[in-house]
Length: 258
Image (cartoon, rainbow, N blue to C red; front, side):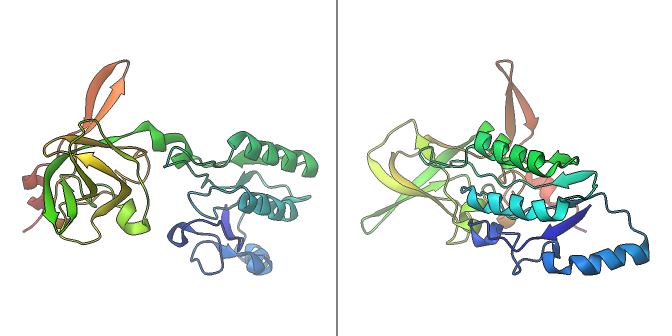
């Protein structure tokens, strides 16, 4: 399969836009003729095209535009596969209107019917399926006061949830133990960007807070920056708790050094 860059703006954050001429991904749509000749020279069997224009897409218009382009490429062609990528966004705020998957699915059905596409259709829905299957619970280490500002320092940092510092992404945060002080949230890492975008909420020392929508691009992007160990993970299965990733120990961070 060949990945095509269709030069379509996904209307999402610039760091997770992957389908414009400014992005490194795929073969430019205007170079398909060259690809055809290369196919003849190298005797490559192209079984289909792959597209992925971006991640956390919350408007259906870029996806419709992509489907129209696919019409042109696949009309009267006999490819085995068509991968239209993923990128359908989720509601991190729990109050915003996002893409209706049923509506998107109907658009795909129209495409298949109108142009008699016989290829197997592949859709990649990673974030859409798993993002809200996970939460992260963090402890408030301490609260600092600095000229009218409260800084709530957690034991969870940007090494555990990188998205806010990398993309200015929002995660809903709640505390079930309300205190008197109203604060934003910061991690323990030695970076000013180690902070979490959320609303100010009332907090209290040593109590717990919950980060929602952490099932995608959190664990997979976690790291050991500042020699911080990775958090442990628990799965809830049939009303039972099971540890699936043990709390990382410091000795494991340094065992490969010589």
